[in-house]
Length: 187
Image 1: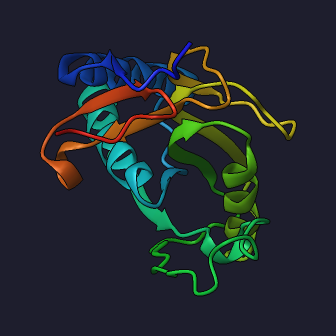
Image 2: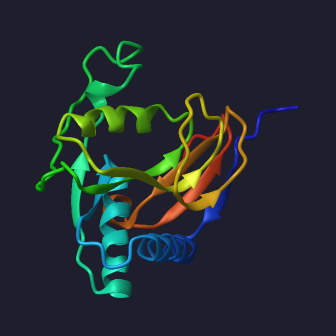
Image 3: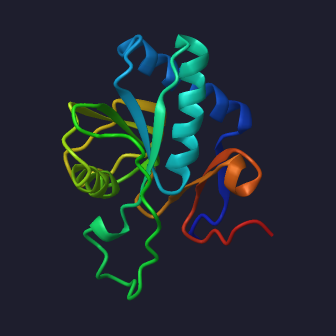
């Protein structure tokens, strides 16, 4: 049987909006009126998701949350595999991390290694009172004991499939795709 080379849309634009609205509601419910809460998006799509969650929470709670950006490139445990010159981008956390409640935000949770790297990077900025994790998609296959506190969509995948998240801010459209190993992208 030939490999699956197709794609399946897991979330379209309205599905992404609903998932983010639901996640924001859960965050607001767990942290009502808490001014010491901040969102830190993991580059790249985690940035856009964190910014949108902050807007949704502001609409729900009337509370404006600070947001930051973290780059985990130098904290990855696979940095020596395949990338001789990793492209390191800027981390921007314009607020004190010490004693803050921080929600790390990413697009896809897979093995847990990116989240582990983000935790290591975050600790270089201080000692948060609490760290939680929000992800748009949890696809399983964890290699580390990490779980998300807020999840937009849980989906079962095989290890050779990929979850692709496209965000309006970067690619002009919101969608989440599940693609097979032979998928070559849009034609």
